[in-house]
Amino acid sequence: MIFNKDTAEKTAELLLQINAIKLNPSTPFLWASGWHSPIYCDNRLTLSFPAIRNYIRDEFSKQIETKFGKPDVIAGVATGAIGIGVLVAEELGLPFVYVRPEPKKHGRQNQVEGFLQKGQNVVVVEDLISTGASSLQAVEALKQAGANVKGMVAIFSYGFEVATENFKKANVELHTLSNYENLLNLAVAKQYITEEEQKTLQLWRENPSRWNV
Image (cartoon, rainbow, N blue to C red; front, side):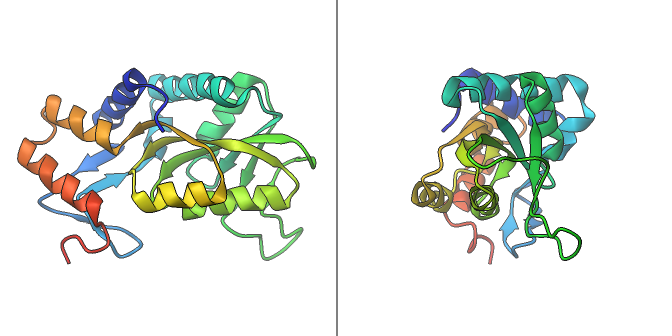
């Protein structure tokens, strides 16, 4: 669920401006999953642009307090959301932890890094939602550490049905600054892509694992 339409459109435009989101229907990207995709998203680029990272920080902070109330701790999902998660925690005056994809193989073998007490309310910050699997693994790690996870906020979501189902099954509330639908509409309006390319991008989203195979 997006926070609001104005935020969704502005976030999408900012991501397109700095090439954090690249649209290339004629020369698809290859994802690590093996999927061929006409879109590639790297929201870590936002950290290199102070005005944009501050905008995302401010929108996240407002969204968190509006949707979840002020939590005890902000958690970032490694590695993409650590930077923006720290900025949000600083803005809200809250402690910060981050969650590894899996426990370390050595030392204390932590998966959750930082000081977290059992029973504390946590909101998770994520940079990107695709299927939701890795994001929800982070939520599960926090729960196993004793946290009360209030929900998750993310910069952008592809809006896959499988992600919606995964979050629903896990009973985790998700809010995003922008999403695929708003991105495509804005990309056409601002002439980043043609209407024909928009159709291609819409077809990909319907069945990404089989697209262009």
